[in-house]
Image 1 (cartoon, helix red, strand yellow):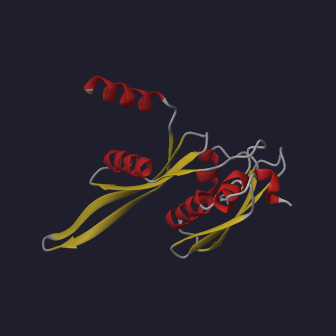
Image 2: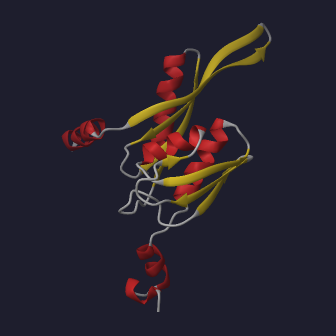
Image 3: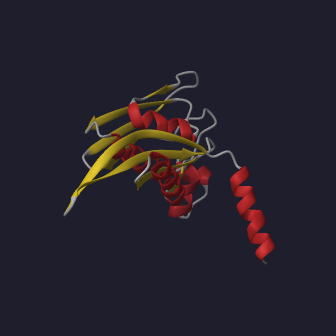
Length: 173
């Protein structure tokens, strides 16, 4: 049994997870003896095949913070249904903190039209053609979380048909 688990873990290592650091901040905590410095890293993890996660890590050194951020990102993975045009199935809005993100599917050849952390989330999710706009906050963490929230709320035609208990062909009838 232990051998099977080890193979599964090795397989997970082989899959091409990409990680991109969006922001590294030096943060302080005031304690009795003065200020304690630590680093906060916002990391986005994705396999460019429909899975993406946003993670935050804090540690006394940058490398440790990034490592923790990657682990956190893999814990908070979101499945993204992609169309044949490597876009999203329908327009969607998402929110995280004070940030709001609006996303619309785009025709093949459009590319990823988005800014900041939202662009990174979409690229690592494997989306190739999309229009996105950040509304409200400019905070990279909240914008990345808003983008992940929007991608998590996407539904395919087959999902909707299954929820209604009818065949996909009858959706338009």
